Length: 116
Image (cartoon, rainbow, N blue to C red; front, side):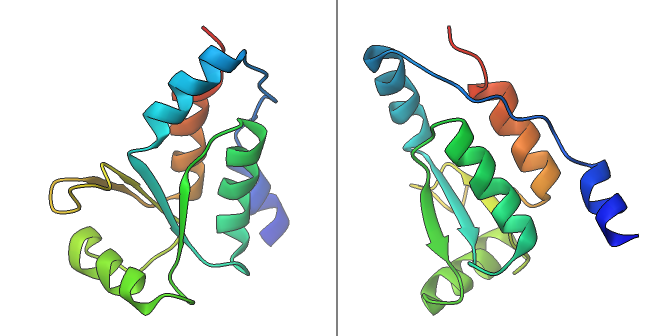
């Protein structure tokens, strides 16, 4: 039953290949992103798998290994739920905090899933 629910919200993630200049543009765009996660979280794994498939260089902030990251998530995001994508990591107070794994994957696919 859990597998059905977990997979029902799955977003198809295309494997993306880019030229060096296209990848440089994507890397510049992802410089403002950080994923709050921890290694054994299945929902976090879903997002990390999408990040890999899309060839994204997103900073990973492990809330279990770095307690300061946990506190950042609580202070600025308002919750300690992971995964959480911080959009605008250089200014956490005004950043957008996206919490649901399916929403995060859909956002990443929409923004980075095709080559220009």
